[in-house]
Image (cartoon, rainbow, N blue to C red; front, side, top):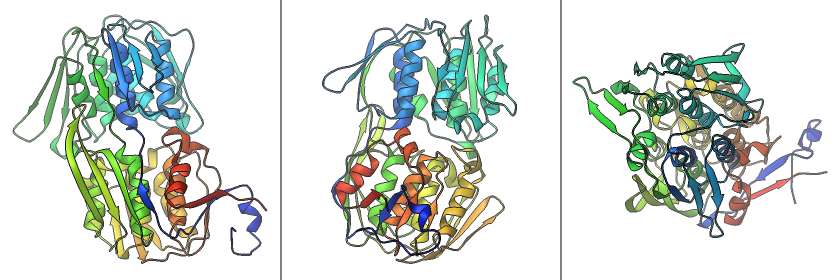
Length: 457
C-alpha cells in the first residue's frame, strides 16, 4: 500500500507515478538496443544498396520517428516475425518527402537527418514535440550551410525547420568547436553525397562518441581516419561512394543500462546481471565515474559486435563515496549525468560534476532539473558556474518530492530510481516521455523488484 507524507501538497501526487522503496533488485535485466546505433543503422541501411537486416533495433518513440522519416525519404523498411528489421536501401537516391518529418522528441534523429538530406536537391521540413522544438539547431546548420544548403528555422534557430538542399553541394573542412557526435555525424553524412572530400577535425580535447565512423566503415564507406601531431582526429569521407547493405546486431544501450545499474548500486541487497551492453570507451564514462565512487561493477565476456565493444555487466549494492569528476569525462557520459546525480545523492561526501553546461540544452534544461529535483527530495546541492556540487546523504536521502519531468525521459527515469532507495516515495508528474528511449523501463524494473505504480487517492 502506497504511503506518502500527509501534507497540504498531498493532492499534487494524485494520478502521478510513484516509486517506493524496494527490498532489493535481482535477476537478469534485458536492456533494450542502443538508441544512437539504432538511428544510424536505419539511416545508413536506408542509403545503402541492397537489403540490410537489423537485430536488436530499439523500438522506442525516437527511433520510430527516424524509421518513419527514412520511409518518407524512399527506404523500404519492414519488421519480420522474428523481430528482425529489414531495410531496403535507395543506393544514395533519396527522394523528396511528400510531407513534413515529425521527429517527436528525437534530437539525434533530427540533427543527423538534416545532414543526410542537405546535400540532396529538394526541400525537407522538420518538426517535433514541444521539447524538441525548444532545442537549438544552429550547431548543425552553421557548418552544413557551408555545403551550399539553406536552412529556415523558427526564431532562435529551433524547429520547425526547412532544409533546402544544395543542388551542387561543396565539400567542406570543419573543425569542431565543441565535443559533439551529432555535429560530427551530420557533417560526415552530408559528405556522403558530395563530389569530393569532406573533412571533420576533432580536437584532442573534444573527442566524442565514434559510432558513426565505425558504422560507416561497416557499410563500406570510403572513410579515412588519421591523427595529427596535436592528437586531433581527422575524419575524411570520400563522397559519391556507394554504401553496401550489411547485417548487424545492435548492442544494448549503455545509457539505458545506467538506470538499473545505479538502482542496484543504491538499493540494499541487490544484484543485477545486464547482458550484451555496448561499452564503447567514448560512450561509457558512466562506468568510469561509478567505479571511482566505489561501485561494485564487473565486466564479463568482453567481445566485439557490429564493430562495437560489448560486455555483460554484473552490478551489486555498494557503499559509494563522493568524487570530483573532471570536465574531460563529460563527452563520454553527457546523457548519464542525471542518473549519476542520483548515485551522488546516496554517496558519502561531496560529489562535483565539472563542465556540464551542455546539460542546459538537452531535452530539457537538465542542469536545472537535476538541482531542482535533488532539492525537492532533501538533498543539498548547488550550481558553481558550469559545475554542479552535490552533498551526498549516504544510504538514505529523504525523498518525498514531486518531480516535474518536463518531457525529459532521463529526468523521469532518474528520479524513479531515486525512489527505489529513498526513505520516502518519489513521484514523477508525467512519465510518458520514457517511451522515447526505454518503453518498458517501469515494467522491467518492477519485475526486478522495484515498486513503481501510478498513484490514485
